[in-house]
Every structure is written in structure tokens, then in C-alpha cells.
Image (cartoon, rainbow, N blue to C red; front, side, top):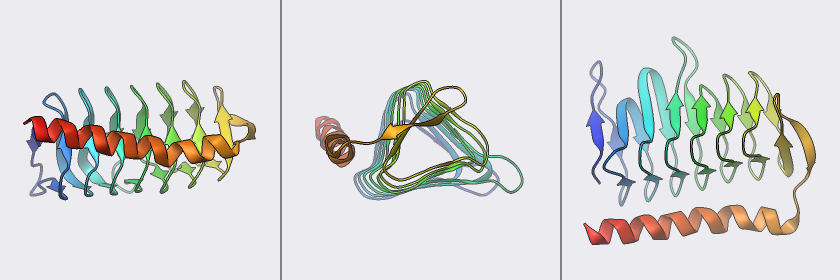
Length: 173
């Protein structure tokens, strides 16, 4: 583990076992990260005015920003979640096994259910619920179609790929 880990207002980020935090990633404040999760280069997880919880085996790819809204909206990211490059995850819930594509934004009080997928570049507006088994796309995001069996199988495979890649980075020192 490396990166910039900063306390804020008596809250120091807490990490599970075998968490990979890239050298240029930043984690601040009331943040908990589960075992084997991985935060890649230029990721920012800022739990300064509310809490952020990230489950096990979750992947935040390069440039992702995770934040909250004071005083009542925290961010919850489950286990086995995949978040693509440059995504913005703001005061919302990503349930276990969900997927958020590159440069997508998920806003306050939105929920991305387990086995749901948000397409690259999509904007999930506040208080939207992305249903399990669906692909949502567009600005604002709308249901596009049901996910195929192959796409549903791909989410946990991709999450595991990043767990393995992070383990390799950790082994390299």
C-alpha cells in the first residue's frame, strides 16, 4: 500500500488486508476499504464531510473520484464492484457486483443495484435506481437493454482480474 493517506477531523482511513493503493492515489478522512480492493493511479476518495465505505475485491480505476455530500449523504460501494477510469461516484450507493463504465457519473442518492451496469460516459442523475440486470446509458442515463449472460459473467471476472493485478503490484513492492 502506498498513496497519500490523510486523516481529517479525527478520522483516519482504515484499510483491510492486501489493499493496493497506487502511489498517486489519495484517500482522506472517514473511509473504510475492504480486503483486496484496489485504487489505481490518480484516484481520489475524499471522506471529509461524510463517510465512504468500500467493500472487498472492489476496483476503482485510474482518475476516479469518490466523494460525499454534507451533512447526510455518504457513499457506499459494495464488494466486487468495478468502476472504470475517470468515473465520478458522488454520495450514492453501488451495490455488490455492480459496474460503472469509464467517465460515467453517478450522483447523490442514486443506487446502482447488484448485477447492473452503467455505460461509459453515462450520467446517473440524483435519486435514480439502476435496476439489476440492466444496462443504462446516456445523459441523463436511461435503461438501454437487459444485460446478456456474458455481460453478467464478465463483471465478477473483471473484478477478479483487478484483484490479481493488484496482488502482482503489491508483490513487486
